[in-house]
Length: 165
Image (cartoon, rainbow, N blue to C red; front, top):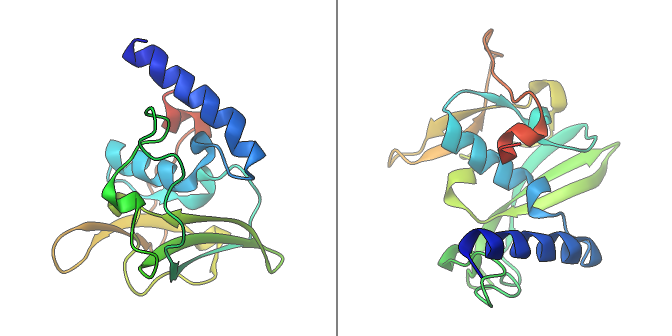
């Protein structure tokens, strides 16, 4: 099977299996959208533009890593890397969205280009959820909540624009 055909087959399998497992398909992953945004530009982005669900506030918390990615490196079904297999006791960042005080979506942040800077955002309202790139002491790019809205804020025209569609 050629590389593009294999990739398409993997995406189709993941799209079918993800809902069965109660997971969001990768195309709906907020973390993958953050990574894609950073790869395209260093401009600020409204977090609401990267989500396909309703929410009132978002937070980033630390939680135990939990289980490693299932099926990692098996027949190329899921991309695999050491960051997807942190030791069980390792603390990872978790992106969480709430609506009316209840969690509506959460996702582990396992990719360094999607990490948030300390102090981690907590209960940031949707209107204030504009993210900008900031750096830690080593110059590594991280996400931060913008303190004041920029007048020329760019956001994707649609969710599909981040997927090349």
